[in-house]
Image 1: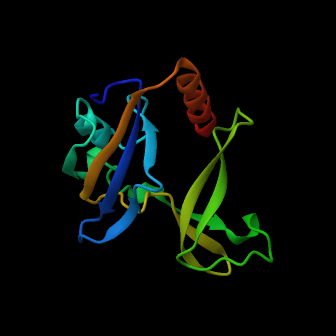
Image 2: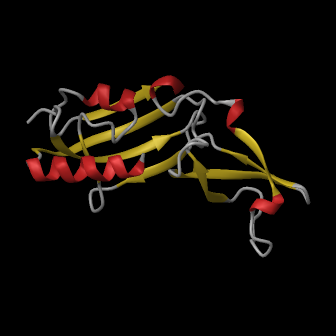
Length: 165
């Protein structure tokens, strides 16, 4: 079966950064499973996998804009130290979950992961960019499963995705 919108796809893969270092992987015992056509994976990767058959082995190279986006200097923010618990054990290099208010008129908050860049007595400097933002990445992929998703699976995954936004 070929990959198309509404298919559940199982992948064995290695994701490599610009330097060729493996930064993420999934094997046949614990493959990456996603719903094709619903934005669950990088847009360029989903585009490249569209129409590919089960069993295919691919090397897919993606530029930043089709993978994890360009590096955005505006993603670096200094948060007053007083916004964090006094006993918080935070060190540069850590990834922490930060709640951001959508806008001043809304009570909606969004949890995002941010990397701690620097700590001073006055502020903690955080980076909201994806770790691979601005990098060309390469996926070495083997498609090990393709099947039609049930309407319930599609509905459940859409509800999960809507909850993440």
